[in-house]
Length: 143
Image: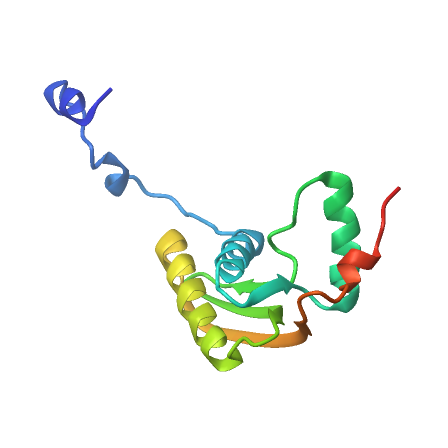
């Protein structure tokens, strides 16, 4: 039913505002949003620490998908969220500019999608990827 059809049928389009209830947002939802937003920033090669990246690479190849929460820890309260991000940057990336862009994009995405206030985003740069060199992910082979 279109909006005009709802209005002509007498159905309120703002009905949800009048209904009481509680919405709970899981830590994993915020972690997924933050992980996707972080990966969109230029200069971010991948996310996660050494062991987490290696295990994640195997899991990604077997499952043929990637885990958007790898390298993200989210703590969600009733109205606020805090995030810890572990990243690997591409060699040559201006790290402080990338961190500023990550904070901006992640906070914007989380706040827009969840309505939660993002109060803290800690960024841990775990490694630098040098293009042309094999990374830990490339060394792991699933047969």
